[in-house]
Amino acid sequence: MVLSNKKIGVAVAGLGFVGGGTHVPAFKKIPGAKLVAVIDVEEEKARKVSMKRNVNYYLDYKEALKNSEIDAVVVAVPTPFHYELVSEAIASGKHVLCEMPLTPTVVESEKLGEKAKKAGVLLMPDLNFRFTPNYVKAKELIKQSAIGKPLAVTFSEFIPAKDLAVQWPSNSWAWNIEKSGGYPDFTLSVWSIDLVQWLLESDIEDTQWISNYSPLSGIDNFIGYNTIGLIRFSSGAVGVLHYCAYGCSWRRG
Ligand SMILES: NC(=O)c1ccc[n+]([C@@H]2O[C@H](COP(=O)([O-])OP(=O)(O)OC[C@H]3O[C@@H](n4cnc5c(N)ncnc54)[C@H](O)[C@@H]3O)[C@@H](O)[C@H]2O)c1
Image (cartoon, rainbow, N blue to C red; front, side):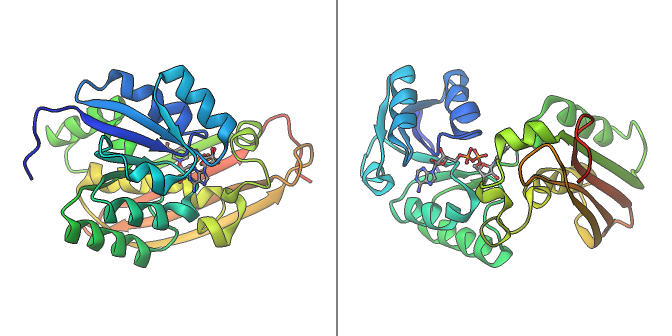
C-alpha cells in the first residue's frame, strides 16, 4: 500500500470515555493526521466536541462516511456496534482503527479482517498497550536478553470499583454479557492478553479461567470481580493474569 505525504483525514465515531476522552485530543499531537469530523448519536455530546475542536459533527454515521475528506475512521462506540460500523467503513473504502474488543466473538473479528483485506483497507485493532512506554521498554529489554528467556509472566490489574462504576454504570452495555461478550473483566482483559503474547513473542495455546463475582453494597447493582487466568504459551512459558474491581471503602453485599 502506498501512502502519500497528505495528512490522513480522520473521523472519530463515539465520543464517550475513550473516543471523546482519548482519541479526539490525541489527534492534536499526530502530525500525519488531521481530525476532520466527530460522530455520536447524542447531539449534545457531538456538538460540544465539534465546537471545542472546530470540526464538523455528524449524528448519522453513514452520512459521515460519504465525506471524501475522511480517509480513516476511529470506531470507539460500544463493542456490540463495532461489527456493523467497521463493516460500513470498510465498504466505504475507509481505513479503520477499531477499539477493543474488536467484536464479542472471534468469528466476527475474523470476518472483519477478511472484509478489510478484500477491500484493500487497513483495519487496526486498538492494542494500545503495545505503545505504552513502560511496555515498549520491557519489550526492548526482553529482546536484548536482559532477563534471558522469559519462562513465566504475571499480570495484575486492579480498578477501584467507584471509578469503574463511573466509567460504566450498571446500565452500560459493558455489563450486558450478550452485548459485550462478558462482564468488564472480559472487556478489560483483551489488552493484557495481547500484551503478554507480544512481549514473549509466543501465542497462548491453553488457558483456564476462574472468577469470583460478588455484588458490592454501596454502589447500585455493581458486581465486583476477581478473575484469574492460568495461561500456557506455545513456547512452554506459563503465566497468571489477574483482573480485579473492588474498592477499599465498599463492603461486599
Ligand atoms: N483502549 C482502551 O484503553 C479502552 C478503554 C475503555 C474502553 N475501550 C473500548 O472503547 C469502546 C467504547 O467504550 P467507552 O467506554 O468509550 O463507551 P462509552 O459508553 O463511554 O461511549 C460510547 C459512545 O458511543 C456513542 N454511540 C453509541 N452508538 C453509536 C453509533 N451507532 N454511532 C455513533 N456513536 C455511537 C455513545 O453515545 C457514546 O457517546 C468499547 O469497545 C470499549 O471496550 C477501550
